[in-house]
Length: 257
Ligand code: PGA
Image (tube, rainbow, N blue to C red; front, top):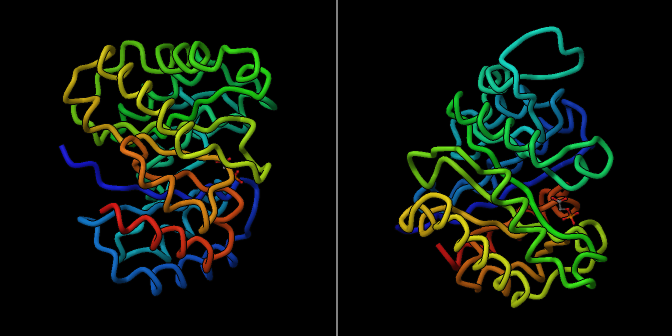
């Protein structure tokens, strides 16, 4: 199954509603030539700007993603947002298990798993982030860590279509550090993740699921990363905040589509 490249901009805790509207209108204009058949593009603003993004992107093929979700459908969970609420404001994706949430907000493999299940129930697509820290890589446990995160995050889920799930390999040592993994390092780990998806679900599922690379992706590095067989797109942080560099990253990935 052909895997349509996917580029997602993870804005983290940046941009007001006015800045979001401005960014999205410019992005929509600049990317009007990229059709959904060629590639998919999404932006992930903070919760407060999701509705503004969805409104500004209406009529385009660019999607909106949340940066997190809570697994319960509703209830007394002060400060949380459900999958249904994300669908309601026009989200198509939600990032879960980002290393910043694992590091600062107590996200675990178990909570990531519950979030993935809650999103799928609402027909939203989880972008499941995983990746090893520097000490884990240096200590030789990178593959074991990624295997645990993949298996525990995905256990018991039953995606019907490979498009129902996205995985983002983000080595923690490459996030926000300017130190991108080499294309070979990304390829090696992402081929490993694809094999695990095959074991957990099925061979066709593993061949169709999109695995993104994330960690200091820049216009200058995206082409070589995308040239790798198992790199189906990118989760971009810092370089996604500027329309020009984000558009360059999308254009750099078009060669693969
Ligand atoms: P970065 O962030 O591109 O700024 O390294 C990537 C991410 O955290 O998703």
